[in-house]
Image (cartoon, one colour):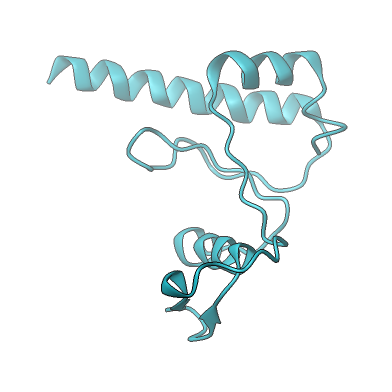
Length: 114
């Protein structure tokens, strides 16, 4: 996805100008400090690595274990658009990003009114 879709000029422009990109890797084997280990509410297994923690977050918060899995969040951690999984069509990713930006702008306008 990153090589095929994110490199598309329209996708890349939006990512660079309109978003803060954060990546959570579920295959990261780096061990967490022992004080950060925890037992998952999903599978009751002890999570000891960054990858385990990231995968658990995705499963618990978004009920999904697909890779890749893209979500757009507002500043409060709320979804802006329906998450998107693997899709090599850049136009679909542009629509996804545009929908997220539209929803974000609507929420910010509403917040300014209140």
